Length: 194
Image 1 (cartoon, rainbow, N blue to C red):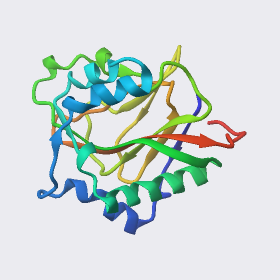
Image 2 (image 1 turned 120 degrees about the horizontal axis):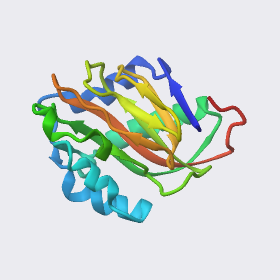
Image 3 (image 1 turned 45 degrees about the horizontal axis):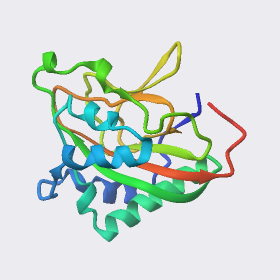
Image 4 (image 1 turned 60 degrees about the vertical axis):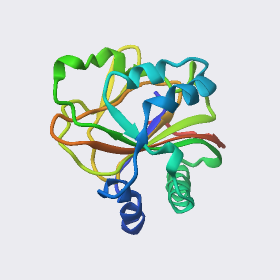
């Protein structure tokens, strides 16, 4: 499985800027309306949009300021450096809020599994940055044919993986979950895999 899990590599001043999406005055827009269209362009289907419909969530994809985009670019540059990649381009960047789940019977964990790309790719990768630490009912997960790997939300942690890997969003029954999710194209693949 082609992935990296980085802890404590993001400078505190950048972490602080990236956490502004948690402030009460941050403007969120309806997430479900545009994610299906973006996903279809990227992967050829709308399974990501259907998956997100299982958990009430909102996102700020359409309202990122130039400062927020610059901060996300800095995050990507740092992560690519640690992974021995060159960042070619960012194809999609999102600040995500997954609302607290009040009724677990409404969530079907199997429907949360998805791929950002239909097949594995050496150049199209996904970066998930955890904006804060929280007590999750279900953590973010990566899957292969026989195993799953859990990544509990811990402030400043990054999971960086091949966009063709099956993965699943996490959620909490106690509070909203904030992440930054970026799809990007990289070059000069590292020789070492976790």
